[in-house]
Length: 131
Image 1: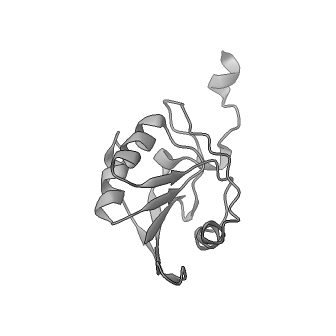
Image 2: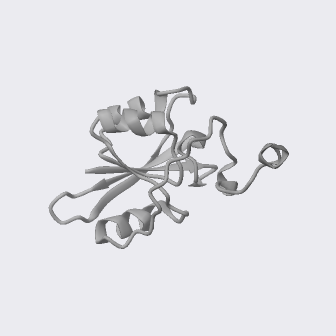
Image 3: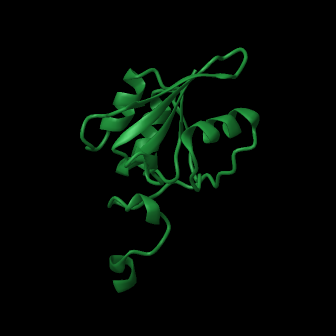
């Protein structure tokens, strides 16, 4: 099993589409123990590129903060589970919590059309305040 966590600048990225890399965590399916963690760099972001790249990496599950409905739909078509609404944390610990059934997540996708700054997901942007 392989679990992906979006990163930006080496830290958890709250918005899937704002990632510049992904932590790719290989998990032993039987023991549910982490075998390895590596960071992979996807092609530059364009609509639909990340889900295809993750599929090609053999990813089964994505742990993310927010995700647009299009990306969520593509992942679903590829048989990749998207767990969304995660507030953040270290990728390895997020995977451990997920495997233990203790991961806290909200389950909301992000319907916004523009990328957020990863540390500010859920906060209003100046554009939001204008109208």
